[in-house]
Image (cartoon, rainbow, N blue to C red; front, side, top):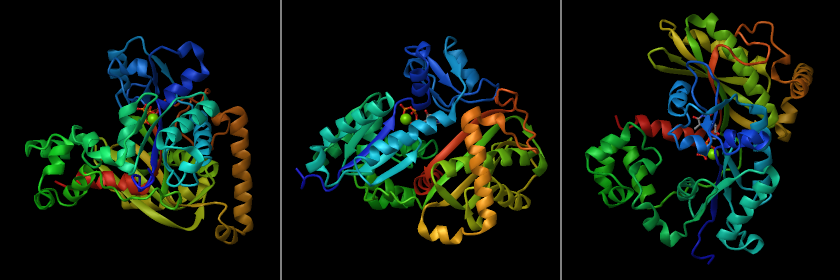
Length: 424
Ligand code: TTP
Ligand code: MG
């Protein structure tokens, strides 16, 4: 068996993650259509329970549309601390199976189980044990895909949902992939898919059987990439090192804003959230990126490296302020986001030397106090003096209708973005 499996890669992804946590914690929500998101007019759905998905409701759908499709849906405001807590637990479970765990987001990870047959048995037994471990630790369902590559493992976990367990042995990969639509190929998004289809490429088999040189000439780098995936070739390793991860927060605004001053409170709020999550994950960031989207959906990003890696809001915010003059402020904005990137583990001994300074220690103490208070009394018990974003007393944003937390591998995100825009 071992020779048949050059690597054993598991992809695990929680089912309807935020909604499942809400249903777990409030039994009155179980079996009912639940939509997680803010009820504001311009907000979007974070996720929907499987009961709500039957009505065609899903992630990123405008809340108004979700309510139209499923009037009886119960809208629940997200509780990110809770999701982060569950996330920590599932990652712990994964790490009890292998040291090579690569989290892709709060609810999703690759686990390299190569060589673990003696401990955990055949790939299917591994998957069963991982599912059971997550169930015992969190009382929640995770879908698991197993194959010899990251790509196929991920497709397998998706196709098995919900509560899936799908093993695709190396000799079944082509039969598994062939009938799937091209949208299942990483890098093929809303732009590339119609172009491929116009050229007669509808299934993964069509791509696999297409001439590679022609694909490359027609689609450039994307062509090479999807041809390899269609053949089930994906050499990328599971990267448990955290050096290329990023943590981001962005808000889609209920009302468009104009000019840098109006963006500042949002950046401060985002820096606060991002710093909190850096500390929770024991990361330090050496880069800050600001993202703005205009009312006409033009996306602008600028980034800057920090002299000293940090997990505090203030340096992140100050770096963001330093970037602001680089943007074109002529148009109104509908989205403001901040991402910390180039992360290293905060407990890295090298970092310890760099961080001996008193000032930093004081800041760290203050941050910890803030985190502890928040953990006890809720996020909005502590508000920053300059925060003009209009929260009400319960901590519900009146202006922010959508917030997105991202906790991604830079490499994966860059890849999908690049491919989506590449072939134009
Ligand atoms: P996903 O794993 O993409 O979705 P899911 O876990 O809700 O459902 P499933 O995996 O069973 O299809 O995302 C994980 C969480 O991330 C999700 O519960 C909510 C959040 N999220 C957003 O906030 N906005 C989004 O657009 C997406 C896709 C997810
Ligand atoms: Mg999920």
